[in-house]
Image (cartoon, rainbow, N blue to C red):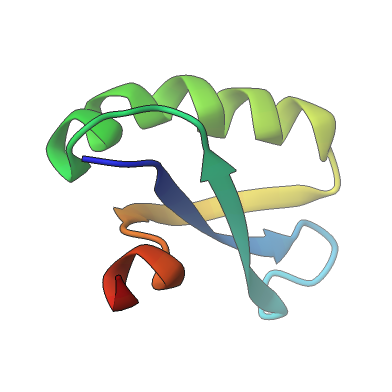
Length: 69
């Protein structure tokens, strides 16, 4: 399997109703299941770099370009 995308749903701490998706292209050669097991590390790192946002949920998916190939 090729690289995967980690999709985070993040919300403002000051306005929890304001949420958006952040997409992280990961350069790991894992299955989607393995990505989910390893994702906690990436989510934790991202959260530490964005203190005004709260990660509500996340998922791994195959990048769009890889789906078309």
